[in-house]
Length: 618
Image 1 (spheres, rainbow, N blue to C red):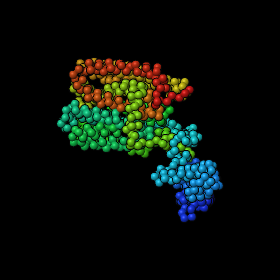
Image 2 (cartoon, rainbow, N blue to C red):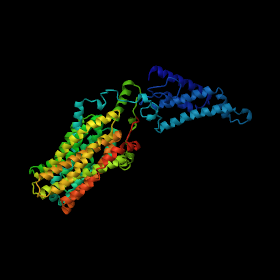
Image 3 (cartoon, helix red, strand yellow):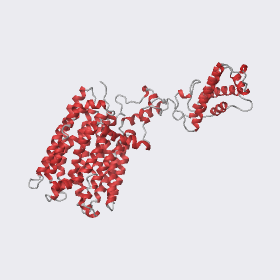
Image 4 (cartoon, helix red, strand yellow):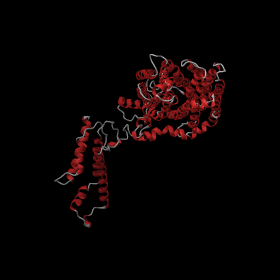
């Protein structure tokens, strides 16, 4: 404590203590004097400059709260003494117990007595609260509610602030995007890399081949539940630290799958691998929204979508080459998945920065307090916490609540879920068409997946072609995001997707050249990726801060579809035939064609009614 400050405090306390000692009985000192004497010897790191309660002044977050109690007591004493010079007479009357009319205190004296008692009782109650570890919080305490803080001291990004991820150089943004894309690929490729090993695992584990489909289905089912936790966690602790621990755990479960000796252990480790592998899939798109302005975000989301879609498409090609290798075998599909995952965790740990704006601004507020000594700097995100008691209520339920109460999330999720489910259905249908019906080898029968991937890459051109239209729409909207301008490519994608399903179904017969179903697969891939990417863009643009939760709601439903459709693929296509079964799916896909039209016309009205989608006033 500064010497001048200590001297001032001791002077005030000594004055008050002396005054009250005079008024107390000679034998004992009253409780007020005891508390004042106790407060005198407490250490302090700051103090007011006048005889006012300490709680009304700036207090360092590490200051001793007992000083505040002592000063409140001192203030009560000074107020009481100033209000009445007849305190001694009142005390004498109270001690003597006189009740005669001539000895009764006047009404003014009674009011003074009651006010003094009130002030002292208030200070005493605060002392009791302190003993219960319920210390009062200063209005300038950094943990105080945001509504009592000064708006001018709220931490913000300055113009051209280097701490703002959107001000990073294009080269650095590209490096971040590359890392995030491969992190998403890590989670998605794990879903299908083991698929070509299903016949081998069936004989090794002693279960039917229909049952071994669960190694894919359960992993994708994990995608449904993981994001309900990972997305809200990212909105409190940031994007980086919501993904890296989850990815590390994914690597551990991949090793667990590789060493499994029976079907139950394999199924359990695959499910939890999907739960933890879903973290980058659900959070990377939101992280890209933190790095890029809306007008440039489409290019980054395109790369992300290619990685997410490329995982389940390229996984079977990689997995078949590993499985047929006699020196490796099916277990190495999971070992390689673990190696890839741990490598990406190590790279991201050292080179991936945090990009979530509220977390960065919270750090900035803390830095400003430390550098300036001014505790008035703050940011509302400092009050954000995740407690075990409310994970299942507030945080786990937000994506589910958005899925059931937000029409935009619901419709987009249903459409995206259907096309996503078809993507995973091909993991079971392609082996039927190219391996069982045409007699191709395990490796050759997975090569048509490359046709699907070529279609995915073609969709990139369709989506990038919409960027100029989107930029013009943003310019008309004063530089703000226009979610509805993301939707025109979905019109094209819906037509391509539906056409591809019918085409594939009726040319899969061995009487037709294999090039026909492979080209049809390209149409399916192009349509799927166009729809998938614009759904993500639309949700990110519409929901801003809650983009991760909106994407998680989408991920939840599409994962349910992707889990269920592969289980039904074998019986459906074998019993109905390839053509009729594909036609049924094509007819269902026609129902999704009006979705982009509806939101292009009514999207703005729906966003204005939403609790989660901000619409700035013009």
